[in-house]
Length: 199
Image 1 (spheres, one colour):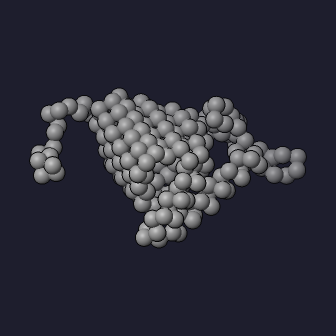
Image 2: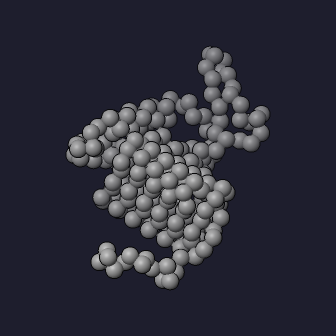
């Protein structure tokens, strides 16, 4: 699965890992926002590859959790969804708006390869595969952004609300739309007029 090859998602080992991650997500989502210690402990178990000062609003939804690596000072707003059947790598200082989805899973294009199959014992299965997602440091994702498998987003990017990212985005770019396209490069000329107020 992690090598990007076709795999059977109903494999018992994978099924158990998804159930475990699902239970941890359910626990996190049901825990009071006032209970910082319990929320942090659940995230440590769900996301062993996360850095310092991870701030997650919840609810969250991860397929596995263990296949996602997150840097320092990352913030994820409501309904952060990561279907990490392939490695997902997130840099430092990344901000995710509400309803952001990172979606590595892929299904074959031909229905002959994609459709559900039956085993001799009567149980069903299908084949899928995953492609990794890499997100650089210092990025900001607006609400309702979807990133598909196989995409790399460079450092310092801004991905506009509602964008569907299907191809790589170079560093320091603003990308918007469906499919997302680069509309500008961020430079020092874009320094915030409010910068003085924040010092």
